Every structure is written in C-alpha cells, then in structure tokens.
Image (cartoon, rainbow, N blue to C red; front, side, top):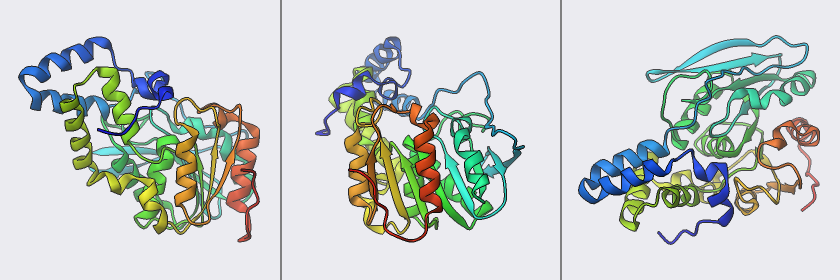
Length: 297
C-alpha cells in the first residue's frame, strides 16, 4: 500500500485502463456488502485488455507473412513469421497487437533473420478475454520453444516486461531490446485502484490477488529478476513517456548486468514503434557482434 502512484500514470491511457466511473461506483458499493465478490470483479477488470473490434495483421513491404497458431491451454495464439535465419521474436504491449511491430520486420529479414510476431493472449487475433503478465511470459517462452533457438527479442511496454520474465525463467536469447519497459506492476495496480476509487482494504486485496495469480510479485519484478539475466540488453525510453515513466526503464537497465540504456526524447510511448531511428537502433543491436555497446545516457 506504500507504493506511490506517479502523476503521469493517473493521466495516462495505461492508467485509465478503460475503467468507467460507473464500474468504480458499482465496485465500491459491492465491496461494502460482498467484499470477496468485489475483489474477484476488480481482478477480472484488471486482467481484461481492451480488444479492438478491427483485427489488424502485421505487414512488411514486399514480404508475405505466414500465419499460424500455437495452442496455449484452451486458447490459440496467433503468430506471423517471415524470412530465414536466426530467430527474432517481436512482442507488443498491453492493449496492443503484433501489427504495431510491423516496422521491425522488413529490416530484420533483410539483415538475415527469421522473424516471428505474436498477438499475446486476449489481444488481436488470439483468443481469450482475460490475461496477465505471468501468462504473457508463459506464451513468449512457449513460442520461443516452437520457433527457437531464439537469437533476439524486441519487445514493447508490458510485452517487454513479459519477455524479460521469460528470459529470466529460462528462455535463451543472445539479445534483448526492451522498449519503454515497466519494471514492476505495483504502480499500475495502484493507478487502477485509484481510478476505481477503491478503498485501502480493497486495494490491498487486489494486490494480494495479483500476487497470488503471479506466484509472487517478486517473480514478475524486473528489478529482482535482473541479476539472473544472461542476454545482452538495450533499453530505449522516451524521458517524457506518459504511459511508463522513464524511471522504470532506467531501473530495468540498472538491475540487468551489462545492459545499456538510451533516452530517446520525442518518441512517446507507442510512437517509438514507428520511429525510424528506434527501429534502426533495435535492429543494429540485435545484429551487433559481441562487443561493448556505446550509447548515450
């Protein structure tokens, strides 16, 4: 309960999580009478991404992607792939889809890589209505086993956090490019609870439920997982990011042995996925020889 809520999160689309004032009022009323039911509904809301009615598929100029599915429990995960060579995984963030990673496909294929991009559970063309960070990590590892060995991962936002968790849990890769990664879930849980107007007791219950679902919050905290990382990592982050504060990306880089951090002003949180310089830096890092990386602070 002591985790502060950054002001930027209260204003950001990540912080809002498409929660209406009516939902908050209903949960507060229910929490006064049936707290366990209210807690279950709050967790359900927190784990339910916004799924676009319009299905988008990743595309790359002059390349034809092959679509296939990977089963995960009762759900099917949509995946697209291109090219030949060492495998690079592309991973989007919460409320996103594989199409957001399209700009990375063509330069990676041109550089001699096999590229696989997925719609994470309950996102895009993948089935399901609810998901969470721990499940994200499971699915990334599952795809890695299917199309590996994995040479590199380029991942965005919550997908970057999930990729880092998968790597810490045994997914092997030589390179990881993390774009605007959050280091821990607590600030976003607190922002969500603040938007709903949950009481301290119901907020504590939500944190406890997320801890249970995740198998322990430390197990999805990139700061505590950092020392176990073996891939060489590059973190790229806009200092003015309103969705994930830049302090989060810096914390990830500081905890990750040998990781490099580069601030990229003016790219925002999702615009950086379309930025030519971001794409160039990410692809260059994935393909770089095993030598020290020089980047700006």
